[in-house]
Image (cartoon, rainbow, N blue to C red):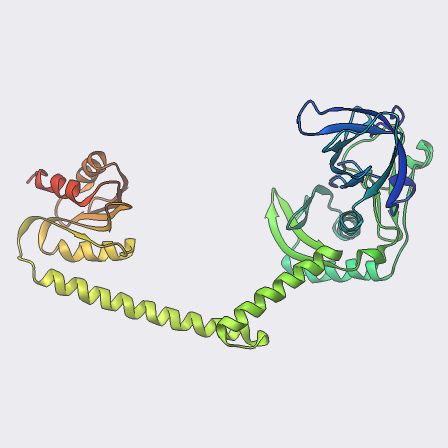
Length: 396
């Protein structure tokens, strides 16, 4: 951030917990990118602009909502929904709950990244605060078995209530320091230090002490670009996430008529019952296919059936194989005229692929397969399907 040429004093660096402040409006003009917003510059502000992976603060200026805060060419632009009078003295108020949550997430990320760097030497190569939690990308692999250890060490650092300090060390002193940074930095560099945990170049705002983070929970670990992506919940976000999980568990418990502590065994029983029912249904449908096919005459040149929706691709293949015992070429369709039809088209003695291509071309279909069976779907009604097969010539 180019603060040297900025007209605005950055109160959020002096006190990250400042909620209220007064300021003078230096400039206010319509936003060139959004005609519904105004860009306001103040002589000082407690609003943090988007940067360093941290979203911008929201709040009020002179009672007018601040929708966003951005930094452009060293200036802090407060995006307001209405104009503010240039030269006027106004009161500002940041949304403290949002600010605290963002600081918890950012400080928690420092703690986690510092510990990962100490244990593995990995760098934090990506950091994003989103609606579903914080994602942190590391340039090396972390096994799922190591996640509980990272959580434990991170929460121990949080509960130790360590001080979180930020300063601009002289360049000669900084050149001798070991600190994390995503890129080479020149000029004044703000260094955030958490005792025995992390030292990192960062322009964001943080809690005063690690205890304010509250708690940290890693909710997922996925391989990502040769390393891993951790999704993490912290502070108020962790509490909200836990509440959603409890609500979900309560709903599932009610649906299963089981205690929350017995959800997993209840789901296993339900899966077993479902698998048994699917097996019985598959057997019943197989018997139904066989019974229907048994009523058909043998030795037909061409045989096709159009059934109601509901048959799966596997069932269509099975049905078609039974029909191929009655005809040189056979096809089965399942669907309706409004949604189209899925099909299986086969033969035990003819290469069916050319017929499948003709079917797709005539009926706006998609699909393919092997010499003895092709499958796909068509966007045609039953009458057009019947017309196609009435005109289909089977070569010897």
